[in-house]
Length: 342
Image 1: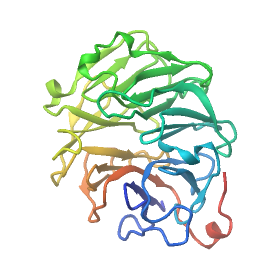
Image 2: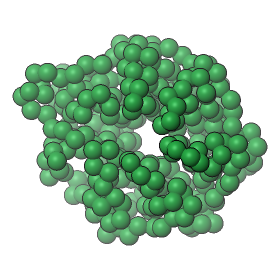
Image 3: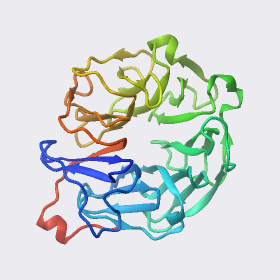
Image 4: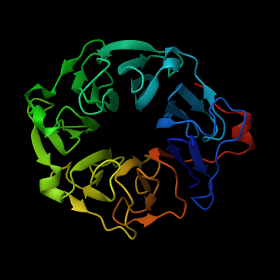
């Protein structure tokens, strides 16, 4: 399968490989997304295998040719830094964008596949504890219900909506705030019963198996010796999870853990090279659930081709990695001539 590997960074925009990581390309000049921009997040467009969105410090961008060329989507998001994007794969017209530092932390919604955006009712105060200005790092749409949305704020708590973002309920009110529980980093919602949600806080994992009614906490440092839990991804089409942690932010080392039972138990995966910082991003795609990319805060990139059981480090190192996506396509003349637009 042809693949395009795309890494977003703080300071080098996006870098991409169309030859399975043998070579990497930066953006060309004279694009609306500049080669030295800060890109905070990426999202593959479920409608087109060669298309993706990028959340940046100057709004939302779109590429229809595997990240080679980018167009800014002119919208209310122009004045916001976008930290997270989410979409339901079976209802791709409904999208969510979480913003934050240095702009205000607000959750926006699109009903037309990203062309236009409006505010939902979820907005944070301009200041918060811990990180000074809040940012929405965690977003998830319930796979069984396109109106079920979960949002987590660093720092500001965990929220859910049952009506597509029109109204919100705070979920973490019973969690002890002294343990970093209002500092949300990621969310995974499983399909099927029992309805299982995992919420990643700065130093642990909260798990619910009754649709968020009750929660159990797993402490990271007590369990693994490293306290900083950063990124959580569900391997497509099954219940396996990949968790990236470290000894702080940016930290000096990182660990990849894998669960085969929805987060009930975890196993540390061996790495051939010592990471230089906390694991910060994981990239998957349902086109090949076995192929997974994982990146550290300070630019180390690892790959697995067996669903996360074994890993190897890529030769290329990057500036600060913010997110990772891979697409089951490569650009060509046909893609360039017929690039999709949102």
